[in-house]
Length: 102
Image 1 (tube, rainbow, N blue to C red):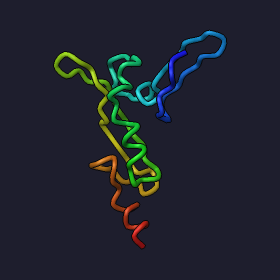
Image 2: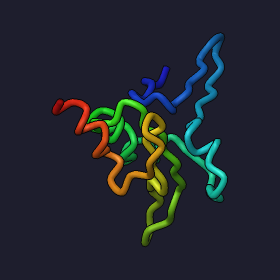
Image 3: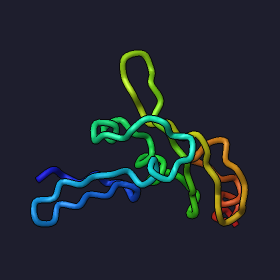
Image 4: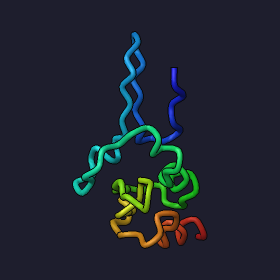
């Protein structure tokens, strides 16, 4: 049985021999034109963003982009849903940082 990926967007169903795996982030992305496969999780930046971001309410959009000979997941849009602002860097929300400093 394959090991699940430590990401809130990864879904794996292995019940009774089923081998269904998907990335719910890429499934919901309106601009994603390429299909997801398990290898993309190995170099995906999303789990790191989720762990290291100071934003408690981080919402992301991503898509699979082809770079040279390989494909990779790139975050195309990030928002703090608590403060309703678009983030330039998914790892840092200035308003969440102000709240923790106070």
